[in-house]
Image 1: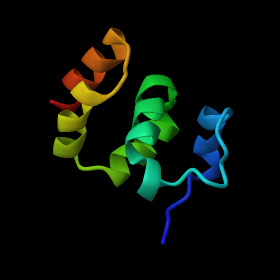
Image 2 (image 1 turned 180 degrees about the vertical axis):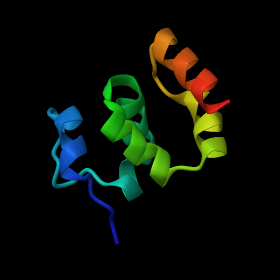
Image 3 (image 1 turned 135 degrees about the vertical axis):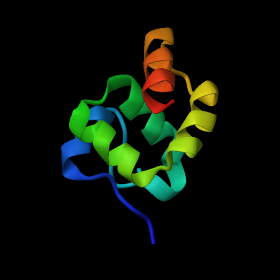
Image 4 (image 1 turned 180 degrees about the horizontal axis):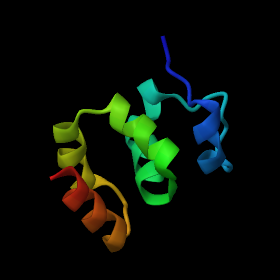
Length: 77
């Protein structure tokens, strides 16, 4: 079963086909987008769905701005 993006988070995926975008198949892309562009509601959703150590290991692999990468590394440490 695929987990779809909640309504309050969909605004960050305006260029994507929301019918096909799911947590199960696009987790890294969703996390990357939310960590780079999301508000506190979207970030809270990602933080609830992902363990802290998973996020910390994933952050270096994501295409984040230096500012966002540094923020999340400090925030999650």
